[in-house]
Image (cartoon, rainbow, N blue to C red; front, side, top):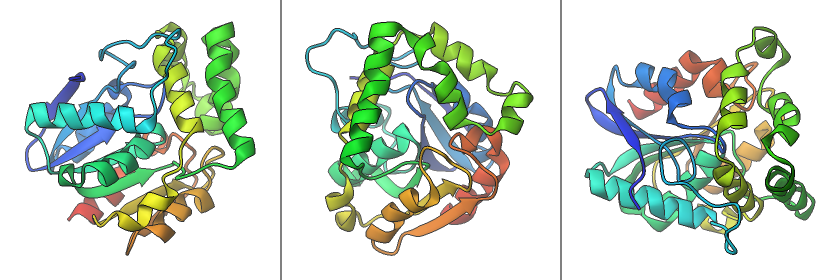
Length: 253
């Protein structure tokens, strides 16, 4: 599997992995900032953007390790690793799999706004986000998703509309497979075995992955650091790209 990707800039390589339902296009403001000092690869995960589609009717849905295998194959094809891997939300969960399964690919790990495991109750809620879209269409999940992802102030400026329109127009396969994979996440036992330098980034007002959730990753990877972006929600890379880029650049430097 070779995924769609873009490259920009020069310097030490950095990979950006986007949230579920998104695409590399929403990573571009951050990629522009990081490419001033790095060569940045932005990648469409399978079922997203211009990468191959996924069917909502597949009997066996993908898990996080399957998505990580796609990323590994694409990195090898592009001769891009080892690279720093920056993943947001779903992308951060995949980044954890990549660092554990393919440590040779990852020179540094930066998981942002994501968990490493879920309670049984949250697994049920999370899986339902995928099945609701499968049975009732993407319109059924839009309002609740926008409330979880963005601050009211950002929504008041209509900054969320581009991704809302993207979700409504995109093929739902990536969303369905993605939420199934998220509902099964259990990276916690793997984290002590991750040896790469790690920076975990949390949004101060993230409703989906609060500070303590992201902090659990930092607490279980040896010598990992945790940084909190003040006033930032789940989609912190969209609302505060400059602050996120500054943290990443400082860490990698």
